Image (tube, rainbow, N blue to C red; front, side, top):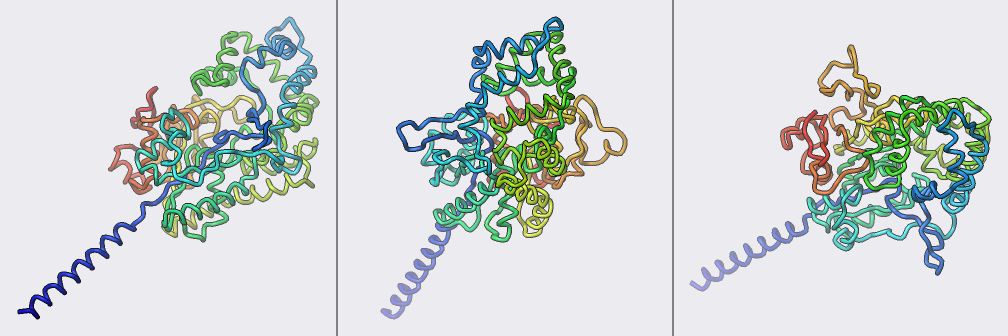
Length: 498
């Protein structure tokens, strides 16, 4: 009897130990951490960090719209652009604009080798999860903080991190910083892999991370949101591609009046549009004439752009790969770029990486890594280059952010063979067949660049994709959420299929 009881107790004890070990194993099972990488302006930059005179550096130095209105000298020359009776002194206009932005550029700009100046940087480099930084996202309404909020609500704040960096610096350096950050998150959580979400310029950081660390096998999924990894066509200005058209200027102003509610940008657009189409048209015609004036363009580049923002690597690195060679040739010819400088070495290295994006994606896909792109469309191109007819999201051209979609000119539709096939949008604007990832690229119409709002269909959709709620393919997403490849957002960012 005792032996039987002993055996029973031993069996029971063994069973308890087995169940305990199983429960421990389940307890140690890790949820994949999600790391969001922000874009331009995601972190404020400061000078004299840690000193009594520490201060935030104004983005691009333009300040508020009222700064322009208070500058009577500059305003006086700008008003002349609106009249056929008054002849503006265009060189004087540049000098006055120079006097406004260059002093700010002395603080904001990098040095001649593309290095951020000593004592400058960011203050919100957070290695802890968002459960420790609720003030950043708890009441967030729009943009990256709103997406972080949605990620926290979907995935748990303890599983969500943000990689903040000085976005002015060389993107390759930002990617190296991300590598260190990923290693720290893995060590902190015990997770073998992380999920990365790259927003805007953050998409370029992710592209660079892919190139440098793809063999580390520590990323389960990459989600690119309104990404700049294939460039932004407005940077064609570095290639001296300036072109201004009255019709396109008016179209752009009309669309941008609803962009970035409450921002300086929106205020300026409304003020300009309020002047009336006739006067704005006159100004556009005057500027169109100037865009063909080589002396004026050279002075604009070397006397204004160069000392203001001309040494910031990240801006040069947003030049599309197919425009890069022309940009280097033309910019170096007029003295906007020094090919012997450290800045040139940085951007040259990055553009080689940019050219390998498709190859890197293919490599990772074969390894089973999930990769997807969200690209927005529905706005006219920025009317200062030859690509003003492009569909953009308010900043980045849809053909670029999508990784190569065939996109009709704004206000037009695709025709012929381009308008046929399963990857063509119902509105005949986009053919996604030519994308790098045609089966895992989604397009959202009528939502501005990174203007995703908290609690909306749009932000929830992005969070669900980022957190692994569904595989990255059109069929799986449609089955789970009902969304096709092409969706549109209303004023409340409720999504419906196009």
